[in-house]
Length: 453
Image 1 (cartoon, one colour):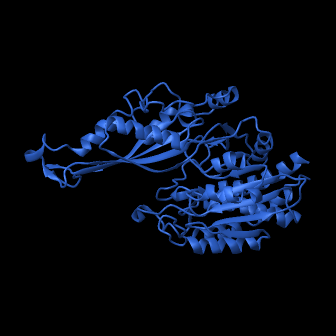
Image 2 (spheres, helix red, strand yellow):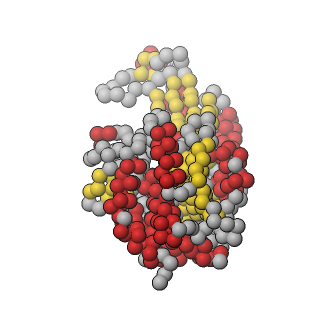
Image 3 (cartoon, helix red, strand yellow):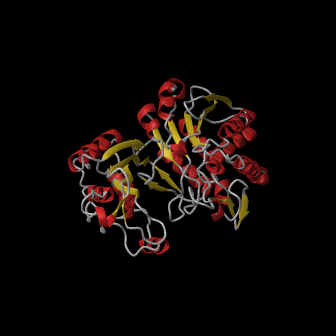
């Protein structure tokens, strides 16, 4: 009899109970941007985690708490750190939701609720995996540390400080995050890194008030044009970022990473049709896998100024703001890149104010990690398919705190469907993927324990 047979049977027998408990968790709002329900949700988790037999501590930060829960087996087994976040995005616009965002509902095999995919449903699956192993075997095959933060959706501003201050008690062999969607093909995957992000604003000022474009056009500078010219100097029509030194230090893929990227299935025509695109962004010859894992980006998130209401208004605006982000890849750092952007602004438009907003560092774990094989086998056991190996995620998570501060290998093993609509109305998680996540969490701990033994 396989040691996981009884655990998988237990998970199946408790489906209704596990769903109802997930629903109860999803009813907690925990919107970190507004401060709505965050402390109540932390208290809810403290009771839940201690109730299943974990030792739990609530650590205060300058804003929302970080919860640390642990189960200690002994020195001769590996220690696995599971990361997740209990905060969620604001649900706006509310009128775009089919059902209320904090009143979970199942439709066509999917659970709809804010936070179900990002990230409550995914880390709750790992919590239930821990509980199921404890219920069936009376213990765990590994030491477990669970870190749940309440600020991921606002950029994780205090997680690095927390990890540094508590480094000695967070000693572990590897870190695992279950967040984000599986590969767009629907295949399970193991992600070995994430891109970082650097965010900034450009603020241009013209006259001390909006002006009549006929009386003052060609006389008073237009701050929107100032930003348009500045932004145009940062990236050309071929898709190349032209900020000096922008690509310095970027690491080339290893042979194994190159092979893994080449094997990722992307249906480009289908992607373009789904998104209503006639073409992909420049450069046209670059594959999607390479775009997401190997190349940094410069994105204009918003350009604001002047009049954008109905009809026309012949106004010469007095101010303009551009909000931008840069996705960073291995070999780049947030502070270095923001310093290069600031230097570029000083050279091309010294009158424009450059404002650093924030960001996170990129993170990378080698595909040759000794933990790759047991993690891969765990997914095969729990989900019945061999996972894709993805060198880096296109988005950003605070993964660097594990690879760069704790100095351990870190993996993202997502459980959510590729069309989970995280951050959007009607966020959802397929019911069967939720239970697949519980089985996967249990298999991960079981396989890591056996591999060590």
